[in-house]
Each structure stands twice: as structure tokens, then as C-alpha cells.
Length: 451
Ligand code: FES
Image (cartoon, rainbow, N blue to C red):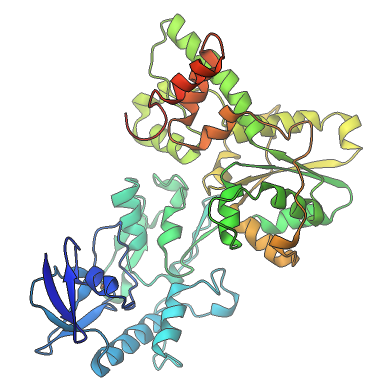
């Protein structure tokens, strides 16, 4: 507990971990590039630099608040520093901003505009680096990297994967996998968390928008999509709907208007998974194969276990994820000439996770040698397709998902929650499905992180 003076006003602080947090608490939004509150502090960009009463400058993200401090956040000197820092970062950055995937949402560009950088005086002297497009989920463009290290710390501190790190020194410094390998030659699981914290277009998601749009335009193709439960909440957020509102009806309506022939709910696939996983658990218990039986719809989790903890991989359920089970069912259903009307099927899954793009390529994601799901479109890609279509999100009529796969149970619905699959399997294996028995399972604490 203490007090400091920020720009002439007294501000109290309690357990804020750095001066930057106290400044933000005081309602001042100073620019930052390398500070992400969940990650360890790196202090490399120096954009958050402030000045004290003696004219000493320091990075506010790396300074612990002390009682009696006097700091200034917006002096002419600081404004000059920030402008120069951004100019130098832009000078070492591939500036084809108008066609960049993150154009419009680039944090670097936003800050440059905010501090008034309207031209860059320096030449880019960095050698052009090749793109790393080896991963089915993540595209790395080292030429857009500003070495803030956010991706490195996310991959290491939070995800525990360690796929990328800093290499070389000075102007040769790079963020790269060890020995300049490709992402696919590392422990990368395609989770995409590095992309979420990247403030530029250096890490982006591999886009599957084009082939899906081509399929929609092809009259000889029947395009079928399944939509994961998480998408219906996240997409509403993106289009400014009230937080937590289920917008499945709007998504179905818009996708029908865009030309998708059939739209199903992945909850149906989750129900299939509950049936199979319950059976597998019973087998494990009764045949003495042993428990635990691990399961996750997240292919990044599965890959991480396989790559880092191979001795535990035998405990992973052999069941496919709901997306893959359902993908196989859709493929089979439209094999029937009565259902495909002589057209070729393009099987699309709308998923919340970049790693799903890699899951569809796994050898066990094929039936009779044919890949079951053709393309995975993430929530963000779907929102970009909707924006391109010009259809106004909150003006469309609500429609239900198509039959015969448009329905799902509550058990399928809770799949996305931690412990949800376990609860669904327990419900399935419970003798007698009366309300009291179901409530007892829900209240047993199996769902959620605690216990
Ligand atoms: Fe403080 Fe980058 S945000 S040094």
C-alpha cells in the first residue's frame, strides 16, 4: 500500500506489480508493445518509458511501485522517445501494410499512428527471411517480427512448449525455432496462442477461406458445414452482440445465404463421442487395461501429450474428437447418391481453434483413405467471410441448423467446459437418468478446475 504522484495527481496503489499497472489504474493508457500482463516482464520495447522528477527515465513495466514516487508519463522528451522507437521498429519491419493480413488490427501500426509517426527516415537494412509455412495452422513471417518476445514467452511460460526462441545477436537477432528449423520440426502443437499475442503480422493463422469460397461458387459441389458450440458465443462478441448471447441461429441463416447447402451442429458429434468414450471407459475398467483414461477435443493437448509425455499417450482415449466423428458421419451420409445429388462433397468444420487445422490431416482422421473433413475455418475466418459477404449480422432472421444432424443433447453441449466430457460420460453411465441422479453428478464438482 502506498501513494505516488503521476502527472501531478496523487494515486494510491496496493498490490500492483509494476508502475505501469498503477499508471493504467490512474486512467492513463501509455503505449506498450512487449508487455502482456499474464506473461513474465521482458522490458525490451521501452515504449512504456516514463520520467521521474529528476529527469531519470525508466521502463514502467519493469519498475516496482514505491511509496512517494513522482513520475511523468507525457513529457516532450518521452513523446520524442516513443516516436523514435516506433520509427526504428517500422524501419526494420516489412511495411507492405496495406495488404497485410492484420491490416486494420495491427498493434504496431495503431501505436505508430497514435504517436504521430507519419514517415520513416531510415532504410530497412535487414536481410529478407523466408516465410515458414510448414505448419497447417500457423504462418510465420520473420520479416514482420519486431522482436518483442511476446510469442516466445507465451510459448514458454504459459503453454510450456518451447517451440521458438531468440537466436543470433544485434541486427541479426531473430525469433525462430532452434537451428532455424521449420515449426513442424519442433514441439509446436499449432495452438495459436503465439498468434494471439503477436502485435504485428509476424504470426498469423493459415487461411482456408479461398478454397471454401471457391467450393461455394461451384455448382457441382455440395458444401456442408458443422459448427462447434464455442463459435456461437465468440462470434456474437465479434459483431457487438450482448456478451454470452448464443448467435447460432444468425450464423446458420448467414451461412445459408452465403451458399452453404447444409449446416449442422457439432453438438451432435459430441453426443456420438460420449457414447463411444463411455464404452471405452467401461472396457478399460472391466478388462483391467487400467485408468486413468484421458480425453480432450483439443488436438493441441493430444499432440503435446504425444510429443512431450509419450509414456502417458497409452492412456489417451482412442475415440476421435466430436469434429472428426461427425466429419466421418457427414462424409458417409453424403456418399449416398440420394443425398449428394451427384455432386462432390466439401466437408467444412467451423471451429474455435487453429490446431483443428492440423487435426484433419492426421492419419486417423481419414476413412477408407479419404480425409473426412476438408477444411477447418476458425471463428475469426468466419467473421471475415461474413464481413466480405456484406450481410449485416444483426439484421438477419434466425434459422435452425439442418436435419438430420442439427440437434444435440445437454451432455454434448458441455463438452467445451473443463470436466464437461467427464460429466457427460458419468451421466451416460449412470443407472437411471432421473433428475435427482443427474443433478447429483452436476453437483459432484467434476466440472470445472477445482477438484
Ligand atoms: Fe515496457 Fe515494452 S512495454 S518495455
